[in-house]
Every structure is written in C-alpha cells, then in structure tokens.
Length: 267
View (cartoon, rainbow, N blue to C red):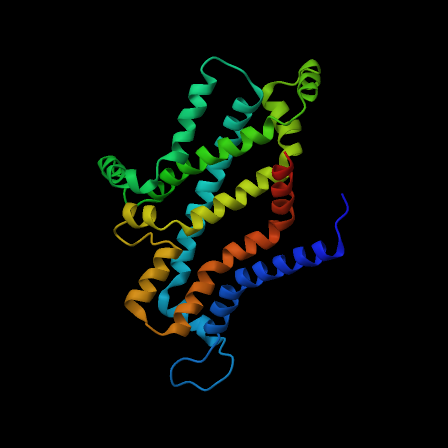
C-alpha cells in the first residue's frame, strides 16, 4: 500500500514531536550541569563535573555498581540462555508449570518481598555483601530473560536443529554453535536491558547493604543530594555522571538493540 505525501509528512511530524519531548529533559539536565553555580561567572563550567565527582565520592559508588552489574548480567544471561533454550526448543513433562513458576519473578514486585528477603539473607550472613545486592536482581532478570529468549529460540528452524542432531551435535553444542549465533540481536538487547535495570536499581541496594560501604551509583546520587549539596548545578552534574555509563553501553550496542527490537516486533 502506497503512502501519500501528506501521510508521510504527518508521520515525520509526529516522530519529530515525540523525539523532542524525549530529548528535552536530557538537554535540560546537561545544560544545568554545565551552568554556573550560585555566585559564579557566566559560561560553561566543566569543573562542575570534577567537583561533583570529588565531593560526592562517585568513584567508589560507580565501582560498586560496575561490580554488581557484571555479576548480575553475566549470571542472569547464562541462566537465561540455558532456561530459554530448554523451554524454547525442548518438550518435557511439567515444562508449562515450570515456565509459569519462572514467570512469578515478573509478577511479584520486589517491594513485596524485599523485607523478608533481607531477614533471610541476614540469617545467612550475606547482608552488606555484593551477593546480597546481586542475587535478588539475578532472580528478577532470569525471569524476564527466560521469557525473552524462549520466544526468540522458538523461532529457530526445527529442521536446522534436527540437522545438527543428525550431524552428531549434542544439545550444548547446538546451543553454542547454532542457536545463540542466530539470536545475537535478541541476546545483546537482553544484555542492555539487564544492565540498565541493574544500574538503576535503588531499593534492593538500599535495603541489602545498610552499612553504606557498598553504596551503588543511584544511592550515591541520593546521598550526594541529601548530605553534601543543594546546588542544582552540582546535582545535575552528579546525575550526568551516574547516567553516563548507561549511555555509553547503549551507544556501543545500539545497532544490535534496534535490530533485536525490530526482529521481535516482526515475530
């Protein structure tokens, strides 16, 4: 069906409007981060970023967030690939019930379980450790990852899997040599989503590490706002510092993410 010039113009106009709505808050934060502090001379003040980094101690909180993100994303990705492969390509007794059990991780909000989970982990001596922050997030990410990759792996050609079996490839070799390489965009998109969720997680990190030694980036920003400064320029600079790793990861992997989203929409 051909699209008229008027319809095409309207589509572009709507896209431009929504793009501006999405970009405006980002531009506002960056502009404020580089604006002069109270009593300072007008102009662009890059030193706001350095001052926010030094005063807020973001080096340590960003390091903690990176460690937690690596643990969560790596562990959840491996488990999601394995479980998604099992549910997407294999048929076994109780698979439907087991899959629904996995989906409970998507249905139960973390706010409902974080307090009893804290007491369980404290009884095991795990509070104020990376494990206490990472394990609940791994469970949540595996639930979505299983759902995401199950749908992706179910689209892999059955004849291709049968040909691999006839050639003597076992399930693990088929997964690593055929299924995963053909699903790279979906896997990369999942990695980016897991990283973003883990990086932005606030409640679990707050409750599971009450000592403050393992304060993550969002907690570091909240502490910076409440204890160190009320200067809007410095607060915006801190927000830019915390958000920058997510922006970098997305820019590096955006081609695969867009491709994975488009493939998912078509399927």
